[in-house]
Image 1 (cartoon, protein in one colour):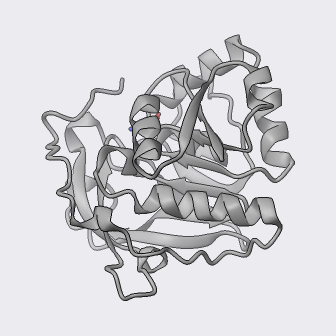
Image 2 (cartoon, rainbow, N blue to C red):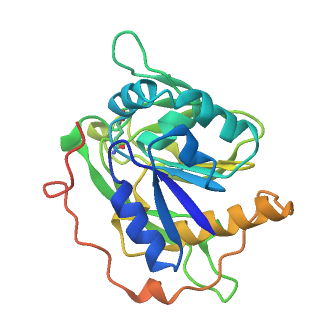
Length: 243
Ligand SMILES: NC(=O)CC[C@H](N)C(=O)O
């Protein structure tokens, strides 16, 4: 399986490295014709406004929309989630172009500025292995978006309980941070910045099922030896800066 990774801006190298760790080749996609060579696509985190400008410049939007429309598997992380949403709020003046397809409204910077970046332990039942592996996942949130509204076809895979007012919202509020709608997967955080490759395995399994035509919204994750690896030691101060 060859997975395309949109390589206009942001953490595309980290996704390619994460794919390599699970034994899959990821190839950089910058042009519409390169999309024809891949069966699934990851849209990385970064800065969605900049990425949208670059995608527009390279005339990629029609091909990306067609890719989604054809039912090919696409995973958007952070800025990539914003790209996939049908609607985004909190955009810069004049708005920004979206690929769409995911029946969601996202807030671009729900958790605040770069300084409000954080890590949090999330409960993700879909990531638990059959053998009873953990369902918890350490999410790295960098100036992260959140899903404000999700349509009936959207399955919520993870929520985050805000604990204080400075993280946005009123505190003690549940916000949606991971979703799946058929062939589309969206995470508000950055699994490619951790050593835990279960989200990449989840996407590959999902992509395999979409290709075989046996897709439903449930994917079984095999237990992964990667779980014993330590997480990368990111702190809010040494996280990559995405403007
Ligand atoms: N880490 C990220 O991808 C941040 C996304 C950012 N909030 C945006 O609007 O693009």
